[in-house]
Each structure stands twice: as C-alpha cells, then as structure tokens.
Length: 429
Ligand SMILES: Cc1cc2nc3c(=O)[nH]c(=O)nc-3n(C[C@H](O)[C@H](O)[C@H](O)COP(=O)(O)OP(=O)(O)OC[C@H]3O[C@@H](n4cnc5c(N)ncnc54)[C@H](O)[C@@H]3O)c2cc1C
Image (cartoon, rainbow, N blue to C red; front, side, top):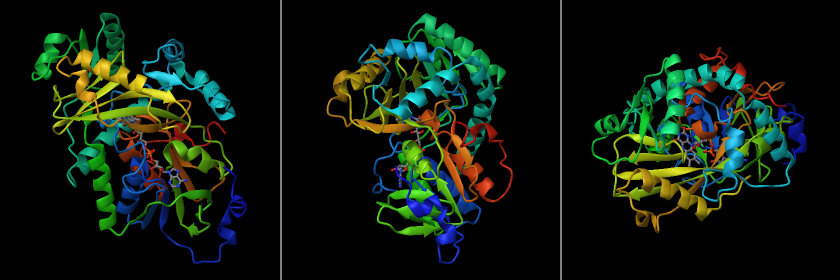
C-alpha cells in the first residue's frame, strides 16, 4: 500500500484541529475489541474503526473457540518445515503454501525457516505460557461480567497412532516442566473424562487448564460493554494509512487520536507499511463448520493431533475446524481440504457421519501469522503515538484479553505486567 504523503510526515504537526484524547483502534476483530475494552476500563475514550460491516469477515467470529495454555510451542518449531513439505503433496492435508511470486512471501518464508529451531522454541515457551495463563485468568474475570459460554474442562489432544502419542507424551513432559497441569490418558481414561462420546484414539493428553467458549458471543459481549461506556464502533470504515497519532480513511477523512492501535489482523502489514516499517505477516487460512444437533457431542474440546483438526462443543452445537493454508488474502473455500477435516473428525468420533456436513456452511478466516509464531505487541520504533497488536496466528482468541490488557498498560505509561521485548514490532524490520 502506498503511504498517503502527508501521513508519511507523521501528520500531527500538519493537523490544525484540537488534540483529541481518545484512542483509535484500527480493526474490530478479537484483538482490537479486547484492546478497546481494557483501554475503556482505564477510563479512555475509544473509537474502533472496522472496514467490514458488523458481523462481517474477520478471523475472530467462527474460530474454534479454544483458550490454550497447552500451546506454548510457537508455529515456527523444529520439524515443521520437513512435515510441511511432505504435506504439500497431499490435497487433503492440514497444511499448504500456495506458490506465488511475492517478495513478501519469500522473505516471510526465509524468516520462518530461520526461526524454526529448538533454541527459538525454548526461548518462547515461558513467555507464551505466561501470556496464556494470564489471559485465562482474564477470561475467568470477564465471564463474571458477561456470558460467553466459558467452559473450564480442559482440552484433549487425541492421538490416532501410538507413535504420535509418544511424541505428544514428550511434549506433555515439557508442559509439566513449565508448571502446566497435564495428564497422559489411555483410552479408558479418555472414556472416563468424556463418557458420553465414543473416541477412536490410542490415547491422548488432557491439558486441564485449557478452556473453550463461544467466540461470537464473546465478541458481542465486548461490543455491548464498550458501547455501554460510551465507546464508538464504526463499521464499513476502511483505514488507508496510519501516521503518528492520526489515521486517514479511504474517503480521505482524517481522524486524530492520542494513540493509534493497529490491530488489523492479517492485513496489518499494509497498515504498518504506511508507517514506514516492515511487520511481516501471512494469512494462514483455516475453515470451520458448525453442526446443530450433531451425531456426537463431546463435553470437552479436543484436537486431533495428526490431522490438526479442532473439535469444540458450543452449547448444543459442534464446531469442527482445521487447515492452515498460507495463501495471501484469499478467503475462498478449497473443498478438498474441507473434506480432509470432515474425514478426520468422523474417523475419531465414529458417531459423526460425513452426511451431516453436507449443506453446512463453510466459514474461512485468515490467521495473522508472523514468521516466528509470536505476536507483535508494542510501539513502533520512532513513533510516540502508535502501537501494533497483531500476528497471533492460531492464538488470537486465547491471547486476546492479555493483549488488550498489556496494550492498555503501555498506553497508560506503565510497564507492562508481562515483559514484551520479545514481541517487539520492529524485530524483522
Ligand atoms: C479455523 C480457525 C480456528 C481457530 N481457532 C482458534 C482457537 O481455537 N483459539 C485461538 O486462540 N485462536 C484461534 N484461531 C485464530 C484466531 O481466530 C485469530 O488469531 C484471531 O481471530 C486474530 O484476531 P485479530 O483481531 O488479530 O484479527 P481479525 O479477527 O482478522 O481482525 C482484524 C480486523 O481488522 C480489520 N481491518 C483490516 N484492515 C483494516 C483497515 N485498513 N481498516 C479498517 N479495518 C481493517 C479486518 O476487517 C478485521 O475485522 C483460529 C483461526 C482459524 C482460521
């Protein structure tokens, strides 16, 4: 995206209006709304600018709804590149990179490969655990203010093969070292934990602290709370460029704010470019389908380890989600990959039938994926009035509240309660 000329000069000095104390948040997904919520809790006036219509496309509404302290390993990890290359040959596999002539994709790919090592995983695990557990506490607190179906029953990582179970047991050992509550389960124990449902698995890991919720209800609740305290949400309002303390909309209108929070999900790179910095992100497309009255309705959410499929009970319905396609900004549905998700779900939960998925709407969303699998959180170097909060990949719902809280602390001029140096916005610039 080309930077609007005056914004490239950090437009505030060119702006003649009165300085406004309100904070402007670009992007009304879960990260933007959580930032707005915690800023409003600090007494700040907030304005959320969202280019889509209300309930429109973003990655936050129909995701798998999981809160995942179990996910302390970033996407960039050893073995991911080799496994990814093998999956490229399988049209129903959970991972795909669409070949494109794109300098951004090439640079992103090279950075990803250089981060996919055990040193990076070890250096990130403690931080991810701290962020996840703090966010979980915030979800607990939020659920006392509004209802979004929070269920604190844990997550089952289900393994179809004994080889995969062994790998997951190793990971469970690391989780225990990090202080997480984890149990290795044989099939009998799985049945004990979720007696109402048949599971075809050699065993699994129970991550006791994981939770699940209804993401749509969570977004609705945040919006209601914001509006109740006088926050403003503008839909159909696309931001063309961001400067220091100012945004320019597509129609040319300029809005000044005491602070700008860029929370544009997979589209954040373009917005950051108008600030003169490189924040590498690729959209990681995933799909979900929601069955009403499904043939199998587990009480616990689960991940099918080999197939990377997420299964989440949401009230009386069941959400089945999966795939990671690095595909730019393309939200189209690849039915072959959808079939891969459905087959895996029906294999592990034999009471689900493939016909149940016929005619069910396929939802797609773009996860904002950074090359090292860590979010971007903090100020843009050299700018006093702009922060970025994005790049949460598969963890954006789970880390939404803590992201919002940390952003509100930085805006208030306090040191963030969890140090965020590792999440520096300019770390690849
Ligand atoms: C299938 C699937 C399952 C998932 N399951 C989980 C899960 O169980 N747990 C979990 O933690 N995460 C999960 N995720 C990931 C999670 O959904 C994302 O990390 C999260 O939604 C990202 O939130 P966000 O606010 O950063 O981005 P988004 O939700 O995409 O929001 C960004 C918003 O910014 C707006 N925007 C962009 N550019 C502009 C502009 N120029 N002007 C104005 N507005 C703009 C966009 O329209 C969009 O609404 C899943 C993702 C997928 C695809």
